[in-house]
Image (cartoon, rainbow, N blue to C red; front, side, top):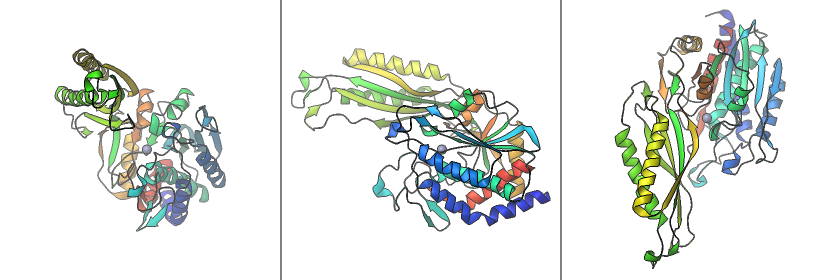
Length: 409
Ligand SMILES: [Zn+2]
């Protein structure tokens, strides 16, 4: 291993406690989307700008996206550059500042936004998703700066907004600015496995659908005077579930899991009283469809079933696509970022690396769509979106080493 790399690794090790402190500092600032009742990422971004200033990057740029729904009226996106010997070939490390809400707080053993260290893990909402990677990328650069090592290629850390709600105000906004080139190396550390042996290069199509069933509200003792939207909605959901699983059951072992998934998920609150027959029923579905299927065709199948149900029941069923990301061409297995990252992982921790696809929904899909090869990789226990989410301090440190290796090797 080159001398610069081993020096950088020792420096990363030395910074371990500071990394843990920085992670906790960031977790303390919730950055929840307006869709979930939050104020967005502005406060967290301000904190981050202080951290970036203290590290001393060569250039820091902001690309705010306007959003009238949040108090600051903007969703911040920040890019911090450390110039390398080669300025044309850039290594981008993209992490997101926003977090999902804590969910049911009674199942948390600690307070979601008051991080706590226990047995080498830091517990808190957003600790793993995606603060861990914000911190490991920040400290890879900090280690190089402290040692006055100029990276071989320019390192650009990208901190984006709005990842959890479809990235319109985040990475999609940045891609529109024309910042990324097809020869760039892009890594999105927002997914992975427990020993860092999995590089994600492909994602399924992601479809989120809102189904609204309209019947007629009435008293529960007189069902014949109304039309129970709750019953029709449930019957429709089950029929749809069955139809999709039977109709789209192809397997592709490149993906984990190797099949398409179709899940009824969120349900909106309906009436306030037990003795009211609901006149409206709203259900949501999350579909992750293998790229071998035409996602548009899946949507027309859903629409056809809705029409059948309308005829059969007299209810009105409308469908709205809340999110639609059609699976882009996978990043090729011989793309430079895949090859370089594989080598970095092998050299730093000696594990065998597997390349494959997942259910999707990360920023990498938007890069691929724009013709920029991107990979998803990090070392995590996959506690994202769960109560008692945590980040292992060991993983923050070790992922930081991989990023440092990619910068200098
Ligand atoms: Zn994430």
